[in-house]
Image (cartoon, rainbow, N blue to C red; front, side):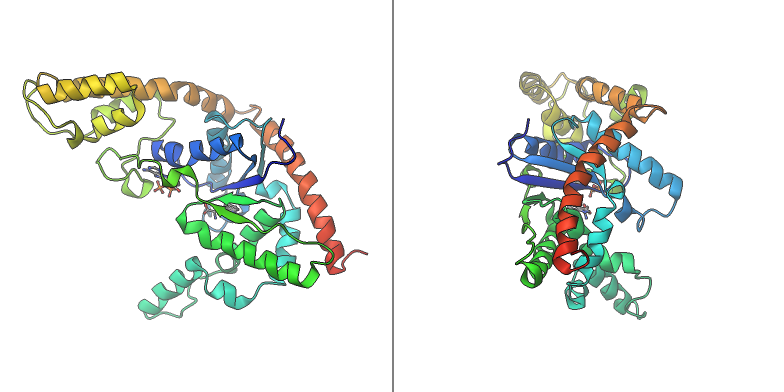
Length: 339
Ligand code: ADP
Ligand code: TRP
């Protein structure tokens, strides 16, 4: 069981698109590893996603899919708290109170909003063209996500650092006004291991990214995974000639996921000549499939109708709400809504 003295780490998960190997290595696994040193909480930022995904069925699918992904990747709901943001209404009540202590100027300077304005000005449009209040208020809702759980640290990538700093600022404003009655924990940014981890190359050798269309999705059926690996481009050096192992992402991926002795031997054989890329592709497929098959199986189970996915999330929400309602009660009383 978790020790009460451990610090709390809160990870917010965006529910967009099909997860790939890069996400697993660079985001999911490092986040799960935090459970070794922190009391961890993970939540799916599903109400945030309403502003990005306008197709209700797609949003439903994304929420289930991202939950199943993290569970399949090893998130242990008995050792952590795992929930959907939308299942914790206290967050939205706190969101209002926080917006009452947040300067508009602060939000004017938020990166995402500023970038939208700059694009509009560049294009000669009204600066707020196409900007909705969801985008503008995003940092306040994110502060509510963080502060309601009294998180000490928030692991985020570089693009989200400002948001955590805003949460700390907003907490400071509240504490300044009401601190004699209740003080929020001031959250800190935690730069996760992923920032130091190796970047996973995509099938074309560039960084694996949805935006480049070069990903290896985590839950491809076995035959599709095989086809995808076979299609990774390699040079056309004949089998018998020496090859530069690092010239293709086939070997780079093998290096990331394969056992050291296999990788070392394959490197030697490629450099010596006499080994073809086809054989390396077979090795890579085997290595990836061995790694992904159990996850894929668990994912498929969880995605099936009637699985225990909803139950797991409901239990998580119950535990999250215990904490959230305690904090909200203090806040309501601190501001004078309740006696
Ligand atoms: P994409 O580039 O596919 O849109 P995201 O921006 O949604 O991926 O990535 C979410 C997180 O996954 C990032 O913060 C990063 O830590 C991790 N990540 C994404 N692609 C890679 C990669 N190729 N190698 C390592 N980590 C990655
Ligand atoms: N904005 C984060 C992202 O884009 C997701 C998120 C929402 C989040 N609320 C959060 C992350 C609270 C950490 C804490 O990735």
